[in-house]
Amino acid sequence: DTAVSQTPKYLVTQMGNDKSIKCEQNLGHDTMYWYKQDSKKFLKIMFSYNNKELIINETVPNRFSPKSPDKAHLNLHINSLELGDSAVYFCASSPIYKRTGAAWGAFFGQGTRLTVV
Amino acid sequence: KNEVEQSPQNLTAQEGEFITINCSYSVGISALHWLQQHPGGGIVSLFMLSSGKKKHGRLIATINIQEKHSSLHITASHPRDSAVYICAATPGAGGTSYGKLTFGQGTILTVHP
Figure 1 (cartoon, rainbow over the protein chains, first blue to last red):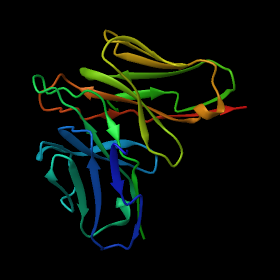
Figure 2: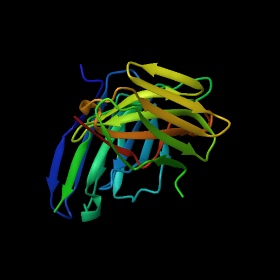
Figure 3: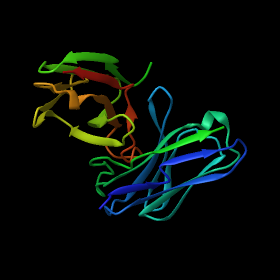
């Protein structure tokens, strides 16, 4: 059973298109994230949702819109794709201690390699 | 300057060698993670530390909170250990961080037979 699953694994598309990446976790975690890994393998947070509510939005262009229909899903929609959006996108989830808000562990999906041509 | 710095960026070793990867951070943290990423693969969490030392098989992770420093050690390294090792910090203690990770640049480890 895959704990955090993303689809698709590979996505090749033309500039200007709109595309979505889906993420689902079956771990019962409250918090989910999207991270972007650039060509130098550097990872950076994009968004975080806790119980379907947006918690963190790290200066990501508004062409990127996350959507969380329920706490087990966090999808990423990207409008008007640009060459610079080419990267690997990772979804992740964490359990959060309700009392402190601290996370315990990090569970990653397998990544989606997006190539914009 | 990145809030989380790793060294070295590249590391080559012969099979059987003892390996150390270092991580320094400049922010207050609630936890420090060590992650492993194989070529073309996903990211696996190896350790999460808030103090002291943890061991799993040939892997050992230590953290010194006062010095804001952590190390990942691999004993008796093997070619299958070849991967990118990433240090990541969860800033603060709860509040609005909600477990977001701030990453180091990664260390590319290659172990030759």
